[in-house]
Image (tube, rainbow, N blue to C red; front, side):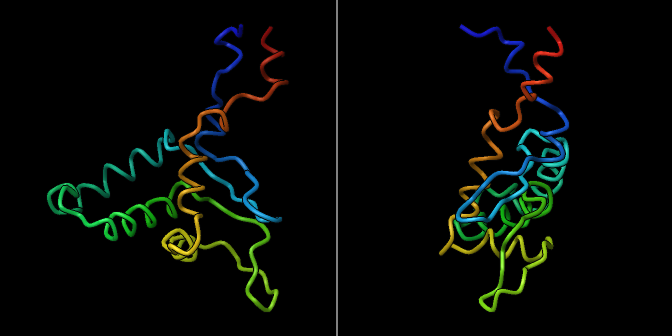
Length: 131
């Protein structure tokens, strides 16, 4: 059995994100869907959607969420390159483009990480320091 205090979440990780491996040597820095920035940005963005988004098509929701995630969830990346090997620097616009791309599963991957509280637990040293 595990005491609940040993699975406490780290607010800094929730808000500032954590580095997670994707495929090959690609890594993404992902914040939690529980971050204050995401919650505030989502509320604000939904107010701008007619009818609160109730009649949005799947494509419109993909666009909406890709822009939102690029703004506050997918915070950075490492080791993404163009075909010629030149590095692709992180930008909110490029992040939204990658998240929108249905030929990739980056959106699904980032969503899975952002929604998994286990990625945002306090570190083992922080846990034992409190004992």
